[in-house]
Length: 360
Ligand code: SAH
Ligand code: SF4
Image (tube, rainbow, N blue to C red; front, side, top):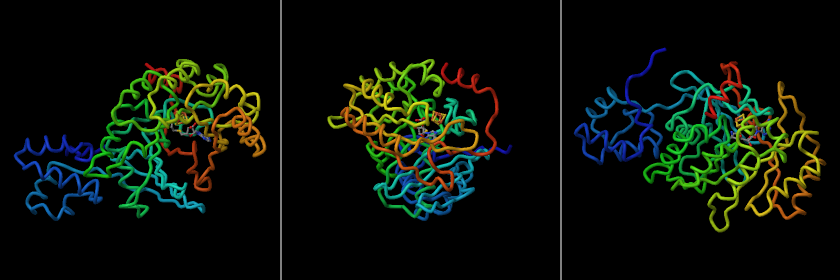
């Protein structure tokens, strides 16, 4: 594979870009100009940067690049959802999704190629982990989505609910949030970001100390240790109760709540007794529950529960004082819904091995 030896400027915060360019004798303001071109104006090469002298643009192009994933596929669902398959510099592919009018405009972004966690109902989990994304690759999905959907200048939210487990790729994920937060770029407030995690406890505690704090969603999916370990493999290391305890000590703003996602699998975790146990588990936690009826797919050994089952579960939670919503699946016709993100070329290597390595 041919690797581009030039430094990728889209991996750098403004401060890092200033250090790099002033180190090469350029005035500091050039860094801000370039940063704005990349993040605010969507430039993918130096030639577009018309307020830079031509010789400088040429010189920059010799040593630096602005890596921008190519759109390999752009699909539109009948419900308005759009899914992009992006090709990265090493030809690996990831998916990201635009979900309009929820009522917000939302971009669903990936943090890894594949995922090591191996949840039994998730197609991305079936791929295993191919590799982590870099901070620039995570944030670049937003640059590409904004252009592809004509959303430049419009407000949007981000959910880190695409392919991958964000807390398994902790540093890159947090740096991506810093890139997106830059005032000279998208100036995206962390309040507009929701990080969804399977619940890696030490990383949750690390997240609790971050200055740029996204909203937190924890994928719980079960109401007993045995049940959760059976469908969410990392749970044998970080049990259900340890996660709830980490949630209890997680710092929240006055009105802040942690979302607990709960994928409903017919006959597995969808009984009223489960709902009652879930309410008991969450007693005293500032929580809301987001029920996600399974998006079924070939190769996933579970069924989606009936609407009546979902309603009964939701009603039970609500009667116990838990605030609850049911996630509508969007983009199922283009396989853009939760858990349906998968691209060719995933590694078939031992899932148990990759998980063990991931959990350290
Ligand atoms: N790895 C993170 C974020 C990506 S998955 C996490 O697990 O939270 C985003 C959400 O989609 C998670 O709540 C996950 O449980 C859910 N999901 C995975 N597969 C699904 C499926 N087949 N149907 C419905 N939701 C699914
Ligand atoms: Fe990974 Fe999330 Fe899928 Fe589990 S649900 S395999 S953590 S992407």
